[in-house]
Length: 187
Image 1 (cartoon, rainbow, N blue to C red):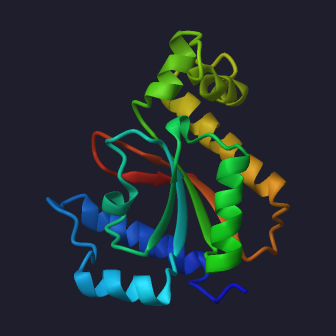
Image 2 (cartoon, rainbow, N blue to C red):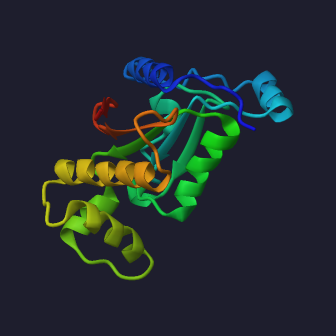
Image 3 (cartoon, helix red, strand yellow):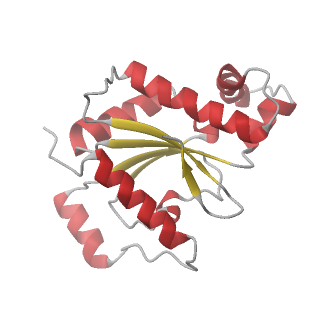
């Protein structure tokens, strides 16, 4: 049985405040203390937001949102695409951890989006670029393609988890601008 967590609107405000602090930070002041590690080990986690983002090493949600241990339930996959594994992870965090906000966080200068625009990769990467292609079609502008890709993932989550406007679980898209560190929320 899930316990109550922050409402989605409060979680979103907390993410925005954390990103504002990050813009001028030189290190992550999020709580990573031994005391918090012990507490979350013994009492479990209560993340206030689920963040689905790219595997890109420049995109670090805990830093971007000035978060510490136990605050974000982060799901990472190249191109922030959605499949049953990611959906299962979202469902788990919402149902069992009580998290009420999902943020699909795309980013500028995304290699997976770029590869989809400029080439037709083979191997296992093709599974990712094929998903992105469904989102972006023939779009060649990288930022527009990134937004379209985020919008598709948001739609998949809402549709597959049967979310309505009345659902406690809210889903929004966002773009992380690698050059400035700013997160642009799309909703």
